[in-house]
Length: 371
Image (cartoon, rainbow, N blue to C red; front, side, top):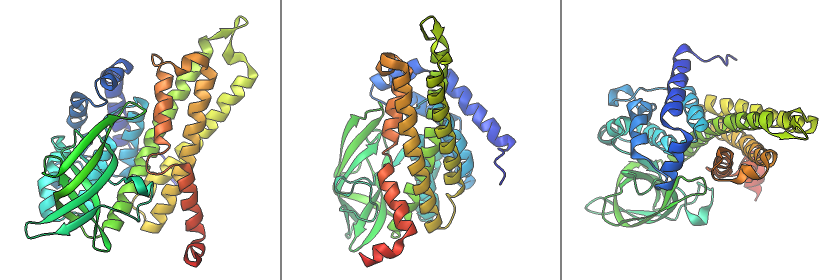
C-alpha cells in the first residue's frame, strides 16, 4: 500500500502548518481560552484558507476533498491544539452532502463552505453515554412542519453555532434534523471544557426543525465514524508536538551536572512514547483510509483505531507530564495544555473501553444475538 502523500497534500499540510505557526501561537491560544474558548477571528481565518469547505462539493462552493486530505489538515491543527471546532464543521458538511435533500444542501452547504454558518453535530445525550442506537429526543410532524423536544449535551461551541444536526426519534425510527439556534424553543447553556474549548447543553422544546433524512441511524453512524477518524488524526498531531517538547526539555534540563536526556532509564521511556505514537499514527491512517468503506468494515476500523489512539493518548500525555516534573502541570507551560487536550480527546466519540467493547462485538456478533 502506498503511504506517500501527493504534492497537493504536502502543500496543504505546509499551508496549515504555516498558519498555525504564524497566527495560532501558544499565547494566542491562551488568550482565546481565557476569553471563552472560541475565537471568531481564528475561525474566519480557517475559512479564508478554504478549510471549512474541504468536505463540501465544488458545486456548492467547497473544494470536495477526501478523508486523507482532511487527515493531513487535522494533524496540523492538532499540532497547534486549535480550539476552533473545524472537525465539527467538516462533519456537518459531509453529512449534509451525503444525506440531505437538494434544497437543504443548496441552503446550507455554501454558507458552511464560506465560513458564514457554523453547523455542529448535537448527538450526545446524558442517559445514552456513547451509544448511538438509542435516543430520547423526539420529533413530531405537525401541519407547520417538524417539532423536536429533548436535550443534548456537550454540543461543541453550541452558543456560537448557527445550527445543529440533531438525531431524533420519529415514532420507532431514528431521523436526523437541522435545527437553527435562533429558532423558538431552543435553549443553550454554554460552558468551557477541561481543555479550554467551548461546549453547551442544548434543550429543545417543540423547536422547529428541517428533516435531513429518515435514515438517521445510518447518518449518525457515518457522522460518528467520520468524527473518530478526524479525532485520531488530530490526536497524532498533539502527540507529535508533545514528544517534541519533551525531548527539547530533556536536552536542556540538568541534574547532577548533566542533561537528563543522557539518563538511560528516561531515554527508554521516551522510546516507548515514540513507539506508542507511531502505532497511533498507523491506526489513524487506517481509520482515514476506511472512511468510505462499507458500514460494517468502517465501524470496525474506527473502533480499532480509537482503541489504539485512546491508549496512546493516555500513555504519551501522562509520561510527558511525569518526565517534566512539576512544571508539566503549570498552566504557563504548554505541555499541560497538550495533556488536557489528549485527556479530553480520549473520551470524544467513545472512550477506550467503549471501543474495546465495540471491537469485541464485531468479532463475536453471535453473542449479541444470544443475549
